[in-house]
Length: 193
Ligand SMILES: Cc1cc2nc3c(=O)[nH]c(=O)nc-3n(C[C@H](O)[C@H](O)[C@H](O)COP(=O)(O)O)c2cc1C
Image (cartoon, rainbow, N blue to C red; front, side, top):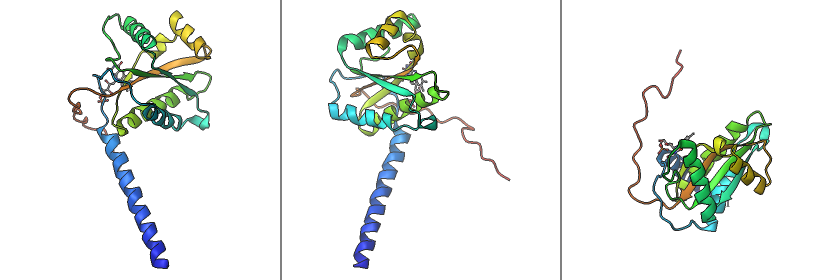
């Protein structure tokens, strides 16, 4: 009986080790995807990504961030156009991705930008772990302090204390998977005696 229990623990440990290895591998191979198929991701994929976002760490556990899911094509287009306007261009900054998760955070919480950025990180990594493509698209702060952005905040039941942190665009990636740039020299500093 003891042998059996030991075997179960060993098996569980090996399974946990395999999952850990996959997690590390996913973190190391995630890249920003900048070309998407039109096909929408599944609800199940979306929910899993959102749950990863909801489980990001936050300062004092205050969960200052919120995630607004936008899949309605006209609203995705509007968000893209508002983003392009901030840059003064007319191209699509969302690269045709069919899903946008807007991360906003409550400015009244001292750690709001850190909290929001960690949510963004979880979304990007979770999307990659599920085989989806994703990319952080910036300028959410500018977009959601504009008149049109404020109207969207109102529609989503958010007041002006919420600041845009980032847009996580998600979809099925198209084309070759991007290669990572070489990691810079001096990324890690070892303090040695
Ligand atoms: C704060 C932040 C803002 C970013 N904004 C944009 C953006 O507006 N548009 C874009 O195409 N990529 C954006 N990216 C993605 C970066 O271009 C990408 O992370 C970087 O080139 C490294 O590539 P990798 O993510 O594939 O490792 C952003 C990333 C971060 C972290």
